[in-house]
Amino acid sequence: MMNITFSRKATEVIFQDAIQRDITTARRTSLLQILWNERYLTRAQLIARVEYRLGRNCFGIAAWEDVFYRDMRVVKRAFQAANYILDYSRNREHLGYYLRGQSALSPEFQQIVKASAAEADQRQIDIYHQLSAAARFRQGCAISDTARKVVAYRIHLENPRLTPQEANRMALQRAYIL
Image: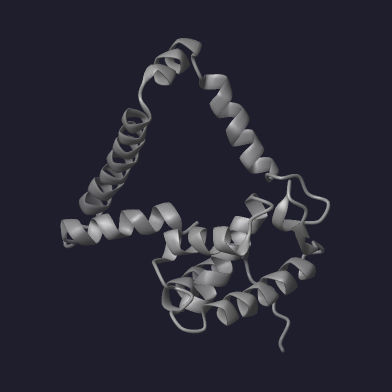
């Protein structure tokens, strides 16, 4: 294998193309990104998160367990190449895959959570708690739908040749493929 150094941006362009064209690369990249940010996720939780990003049955229909474990072996090697150890905890309090020596959330996610908590207004929280579970769920869905529609609208403005459905699909891809 040749050892040529390219710029990170150039490599990223090629890598993103591979992710879009190859479902195996996309699955493994999603697993790597998810595990980089979150710890103690079980197989079912990881599969659900990846399927949310890439679509249902992206691991296949028949031998999906074998596919998952093959993908995880590659992801584990990728972490080892970066001097991290991906391990599995069977402890009831912390069940699932985790990066040894790392906190439950990545520092980036911890910052996001801290920033979000600092922006919260106690009056808003009190009002929110008064809503029924169904109303809170509807509100969350409405916020997500509005954000997706805004992104789809901007994509359509940038690419007028796209149909609204194509712009919506691209908005969903941007949201779930990091």
